[in-house]
Each structure stands twice: as structure tokens, then as C-alpha cells.
Image 1 (cartoon, rainbow over the protein chains, first blue to last red):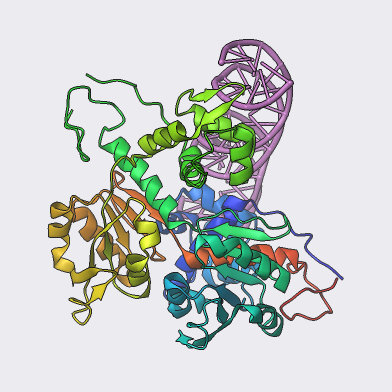
Image 2: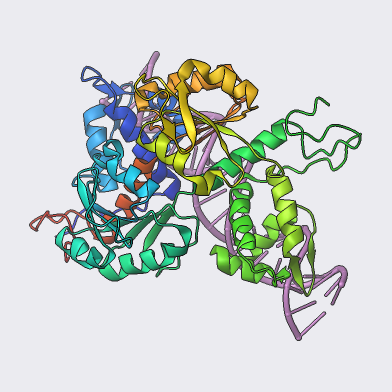
Length: 229
Length: 229
DNA sequence: CATTGTGAAGCGTTTCACAGCC
DNA sequence: GGCTGTGAAACGCTTCACAATG
């Protein structure tokens, strides 16, 4: 017995729903309704976009009034699959892996750390954010015992592909990749990538445009900052 | 005297150029040329996309041969403004701030850490990744002395807006924001946001679709994983 | 009458397909 | 022959503008 033949939600909308959710969660308990204008203001986007985004969830607003905060929170959570926790396993207990494991702030929002594994014998057994680092070979056990669907790759780039393959072999179906490498995995696996260097390089591009560089100053200073042309 | 009336490069292309650059850098010294097909394969994208992306830099390929790796690297670096280092300043020496400061891997790729500041007196003076944590008020000094254009917000959410305002006041013009908050800054400032919880929530959405949830099972198990419907 | 929900237009990105060139 | 460079078509996302409505 199946209901609601689930609409496909555009990826761009999916990426914004968590933001709306966060904003709604920050509203005081006295705020019962919120308009697309207000939500748009908080999220820094266009109000029409908010309405269109929310319309994919169904028609949960009231004309002349707005959206009921509590109900909207419920609908977004349901759509994002946040009605229950998603334990994650972290591969790599280096700087980043440790920071992620310790970073309760993010992971406690429904993504508890089910385990941290590393290949380095020296790290195995140490505690990180309340979790004991286990050996890489324990991955399948952790994934099965804790019913993990999401894996986090926080290894050096050279080890990332192997980490991804082990995660997939262990039964993980989504991967968040922090290593600066393209992971080769079956198309059935969802992968998202966070690359800090890429982010900085994109900012660098904008800085460089801003400073008027790129326009080659033929007889001018070539030093880094603003070529006061 | 100004040359090359700089084409505007689409944002989507700008976001991919760092990836191409990384791949090109990983090629052995014996690889002199690379085709759009090969580059596309490594980057996991369509070959036509690679060609169109590179065409925005100018026509640097040779028909029948491909692109000369060294020259392409040079052109991409120039376009991204990576011909010189961009020192960054990190606000917040908590878990994430420390991990970023220590993470030579990313930041040494042209983004040296010019300074780390924090508001917490207990942290000031401690060493983190070879840099001494300084007090928040030193921000303007660091930015000016080290000619910093890019700031990284790695504070708790409640402190992020203040951190951003201080960065802007100090003269920073680009911000990489790790805090789960929308930053309110002048439109002249470039902001990029990395939100780990958002990434996980997007993966959660795909997991939930995969598992067939969302189709409400009227008389079935509501437990986490696959509802074998 | 404030605010939603949504067709339709506008815009940016991707992909195709092939002419142009080495 | 192989591969680039690019118009043009296709696609998806954003924004507009307004009818629908509590």
C-alpha cells in the first residue's frame, strides 16, 4: 500500500532545503508562521525561489498568511529523510578526520559517528571525539552492525580511491569525499565532494578579477595586489 | 596600456578549472599533451564540456594533438590568479580552525596561513600548525601586514556574522565560511560557503529516495533502512 | 488584501554535431 | 585521421508576473 507517488525534486532545490530547515529551526517558539519573503530574506535568496522550492513538497502554505513553521519543518525533514539518524563512518583519522569526529556540532544533527577507521597502526585504539579508532579491516563490521549508509573519506588523496572501494564493498551507498580526487565508484553510489583548495581557488579567481589583474599592465607593477590602473 | 579585454568566464567553468589543474599537475613529466577526452575521463565529465571550458581561456589546443600540459597549467593558473600566493587568515581556533591551520596539504597549495585569531584568551598564544594564535583584535594588523585578501570563518555559528564583519572591516574581500549561517556582507565581497551538515543532508535525501521511503508504507515497518516494498 | 502557487519567459549550462585544422 | 573549437539545440534553474484564495 503505497501513497504519494513522490515527485522528483530538482537538485538545486534539494541543496537549499537544509538551509531553510536551519533557518526555521532558529525561529523562536512564538513564531508560528513565516512568509516566503521572510524566509527568502534570511536565506539570502529570491522569494519566488522559496515558493517554488516549497511547492515541490506540496502545497503547505496558506495564502495571505504564510507557512506554518512547525509543519514546514516536518515536511522538509521528511523529504530529506531526516526523520531518523544516519550514522556515518569516517575513513581516515588524520587532521581532518579527527576534526570531523570531534565536531559534535555538525554530526550530532542527525549524523552520529558510528566509527572511525585508519590504516595507521599507531592511531588504532586512540580515542577521537568519544569514538575509538579501529582498523580499516573492521569497516564491513561497523557498516553492518551500525547499519551505516554514509561514509566519509578523509584520507590523503593517494588512499582515497581505496577507501571509497572499501566503503562500497562494505555496503555504504553514499560517500562524502574530502580528498582532492575524483572517486571512481558505481553510478548507483551517491558521491559529494568537498574540496577546500577548490573553494579557495574560486575565491582567488574573483580576487584576481577584482584587482584588475588579468588585464596585463604592459609597463606597470606586476606585484600581487591592486594595479591602480 | 591594457591587453586582452578579459572574457567573462561562466561560474560553472571557474568551479571546474581547479579540478583540471589538479589533474594536469598529477601527470608525469613525460606527458606532454593531453586530449579533451583524456582530461574528461580523469575529471569524470563530458569531453565537450572540457573543450568549451578551455575555450574560454583562449584557443590553446592543437587539433589532432590535444593540449600541451605545461602551457595549459600556466594558462589556468593565470586565469585563476594562482601566479602568486594568497595568504589567508583564519578566524576561530576551534576543532575546524585548527584542522585547517594544520592541514598543510591544502593551504600550502598557494594559500599559506598568515594568521589564526580567536576570541578565547585560553587559546591565544598557543601554536597551531606552526602559527601562533593571536587575539581577534589583531585582525586588522595581520591583514594589512601580510596583505591578506581571503578570510576563513571557522567560528561557532553565533560568532560567524561578527567574524565576517571584522574581516571586512580589516580589508578582506573574500570569505570562505564554514559556519552554518548566511553571512550578511556587502555585495562587493565574495563569499563561499562550505557546510558539512548540508552535504550530509543532501546525501540523506538520496539515501531516502534509494530506500523507497517517502512512499509511505501504510501498514509496514517504519524502521530506518530499505522498506522492501 | 497579503501572500501563495504556478504558467511562462528569461537565462545560464550542458550536450550535440560537425566544420575547421594540424 | 584525430582532435579542437563552436554554433545551435536541449535542458534545467531562476525570475517574473499574476490569477487564485484564505
